[in-house]
Image (tube, rainbow, N blue to C red; front, side, top):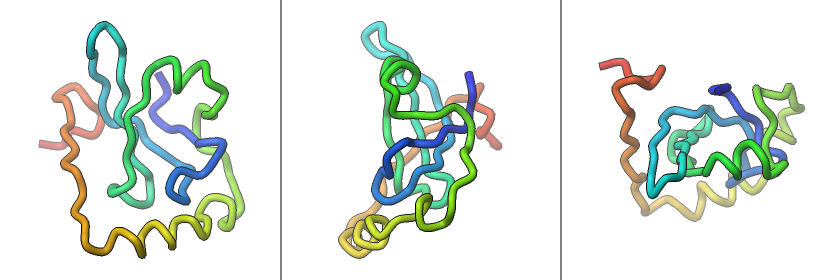
Length: 99
């Protein structure tokens, strides 16, 4: 499974994500994705959403800055000033587990 992904549409203004964790819930494989530029922007995606939805490219697509970091990101960050981020838990077998 590729660890680096590009979203076709910006998610909170960003498009490049890393798959940092994989879990199984109720028989479904769930992936935790984190923005390469801002760890506060993270999401959970099922295998179906990631592989078969047509919303993601495997790997990082080289994009102009205005397409990879949109105005939506600035708006999102402005609206989140008073909120903290959710904790991100990494499995022991994750490539990003450095403990």
